[in-house]
Amino acid sequence: MTDQEKNQLFEKYNNRTHVIGRIACLVTLVMLLASPFVMGWYLGAVPDMGAFAKGFAATGIVYLVSCVAEYLIYTPMLGAGGSYLAFITGNLINMKIPCAVNARDIVGTKTGTPENEIVSTLSIATSSLVTIVVLALGVALLIPLQPVLQNPALQPAFDNVVPALFGAMAYKYYRKNMRIASLPLIVMSVLFILVPRLTGSTSFMILPSGAIAIAVAFYFYKKGNKAA
Image (cartoon, rainbow, N blue to C red):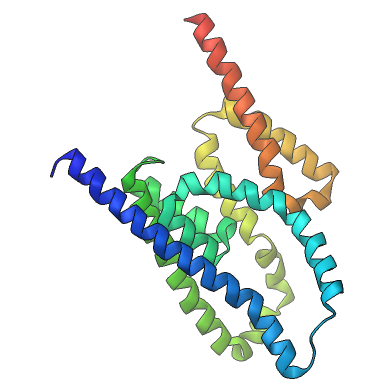
């Protein structure tokens, strides 16, 4: 098969993916928004729509920046199929992104290639299926495991699952180019220590940390060109 034929097949695959992805996103959005109102109407507990609109607007403004940032950052990493699956099933930062990045590293694909899109889609689909199975088992075993889950000795472990996961993943990338990674890491660490409430806005803080990394990389790039 020639490269032109491969590109045509991949373009056809992508077009079909966009059609299915948009339909799935629309159905998911309608279901997410409609379910609370249907339950409210059925139970006679519909909230005041004016108060709802104000609360929704206040919350939406807070998450607007992080939503745009996540879309711009994660979509090129995951490709079309992976992005639709990840944004529909959720839990990107904790589950889907680490899974896709790890799969990409194992296979050895590069971001922006058709191979990377296929690998990302397969890895996120697998992650989503495993998540559903684990959640189903968790719900079924919630009562029997309640004494274990509520054990005070295990709470520190549960509180540090995400930092441990991303710390291990981040080191693998930091060590490849510590000159670029050091300054954003130091600045963000100091900032989070001085302003602890920012830990709840990690998606938003991707923007300034990414900007610092880009500025540092550009500085070394210009420095290298001058030296050459």
